[in-house]
Amino acid sequence: MPKSPDSETSRRFFLQRLAFVGGGVVLGGAACRRPPAAPAAAKAAPIVRPPWLDAALASPHQSFTAEEYATVCAATERILPRDEDPGAIDAGVPEYIDRMLGDPELHEMRDVFKGGVAALGTLARARFKRRFAELAPEQQDQLLALFRDAPEGSPKGKLFETLMVLTMEGFLGDPSYGGNRDRVGWALVGFDTSMPPHYHPAELGAMAMPVSEGER
Image 1 (spheres, rainbow, N blue to C red):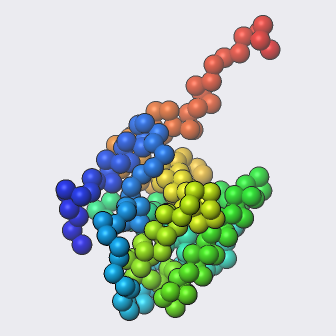
Image 2: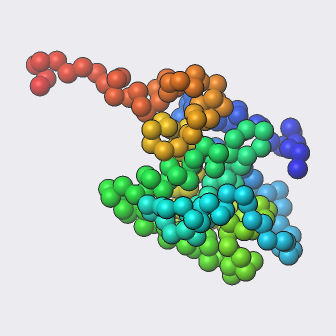
Image 3: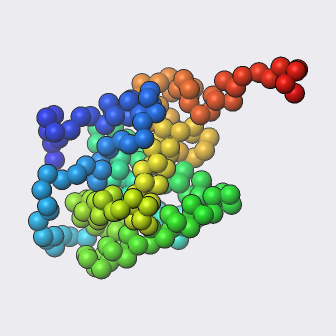
């Protein structure tokens, strides 16, 4: 569906602003925007089987079951969907999230996130009798909006907040951590694709102030 220039600024602009000012919220896909009116009752839709689903279900994962991973893939792709530019799956965002949450030091975050992912999958089956990854994009957005609009600090709210943060990290972060495949995120915001952007976290170590002998 064509995007209205009056109602939506390009994703490229938002990503550029995030990269330069370190913003905490990026309005990427439709799931991140508040609808102008309450959605109409959901209509039956054909089962959607995205081309990446079989590979997601079959590939090994560090932090998720196969179905959980497929849910993460679909959710991140609604945050940053592919259009004229690469989307979250193109950039390897789900792989990044799976790898990061496999860190033993992040076990509390992983448990909360997995609980939210499970709740999202349960809600999809309860409302639409299908896996979240098999829903139409509009149905996925409807469910994600419930998590986005949940009270701050609630399990649903925590999932959406963490999903947003990890999606942006995976899209714009250092490729050595598993995301930003082929440096597509850096290319999208106009950075030289051979090196991280200025003040990127990968460079922070080099920016540390030297310690004088008297301070040792």
